[in-house]
Length: 88
Image 1 (cartoon, rainbow, N blue to C red):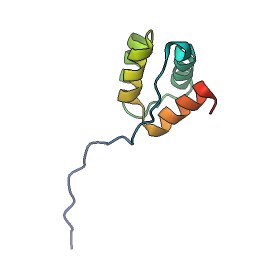
Image 2 (image 1 turned 60 degrees about the horizontal axis):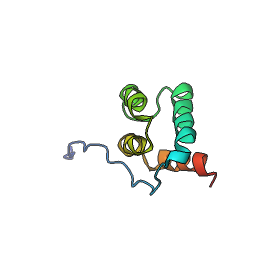
Image 3 (image 1 turned 90 degrees about the horizontal axis):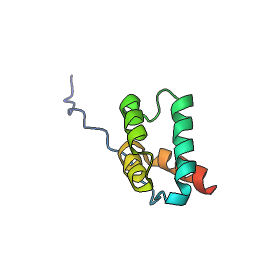
């Protein structure tokens, strides 16, 4: 007997951290994200090529990079970025 399967729902990202990139942390955040692109072709998990293009457009400003992080990183990736910046 076949069961009805609901259509796939769009991927819902986990809740983000309250991390905000401030101007003094901008360089560390840029370096961390660029390192992820350089070493992980699949990073971030969704549309990595588009994410990388947008990163290069938005990386110069802390507020813009926050917007990029909200759009592209899941909760786990945000926590790793935060840990990389703060050491916590």
